[in-house]
Image (cartoon, rainbow, N blue to C red; front, side, top):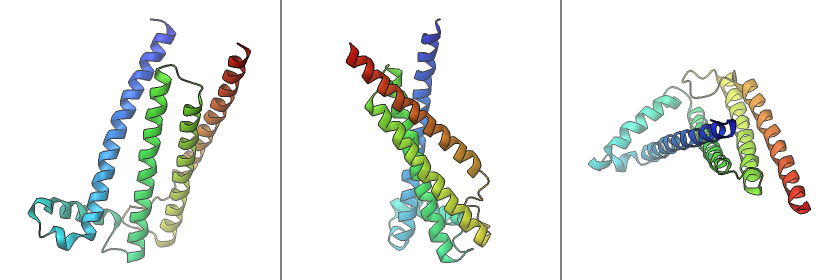
Length: 185
């Protein structure tokens, strides 16, 4: 098996794995949204027996973010930050899946892939920003619930973001070379 065939096979496997990871994260995200909406609609939902499972999900979600243990502002901010970070995580995984899907069929240096890498970069930057805010809140209140980041992974996240930015620059340069090459022919 040639190196190019091995690379295509590995890319195909990575594409399938990224789709599976995206599907699982998307389902968890929908479940979290349902759980939080269920918490707001708890009095109504508790009357409907078919939807009572949401009440259980909501109470577990509230335990995760520390409702009843911490001040309400901390619970609301932790819930909001957690949901925004998880949303960005799902978006990043989806964009990586779409990028791998394009690369698998030999569409490497084009505007679409450059846009995917750009949005992965922006999303990761937003994720890091939210994680920094979460770490600051954690340091201010010493959150015992564990819902907020303690900031220990920020240096790794910033390093990964720089790597993604370098990949973006490489894609941008590759696209320019591809356009120059196409204009010569």
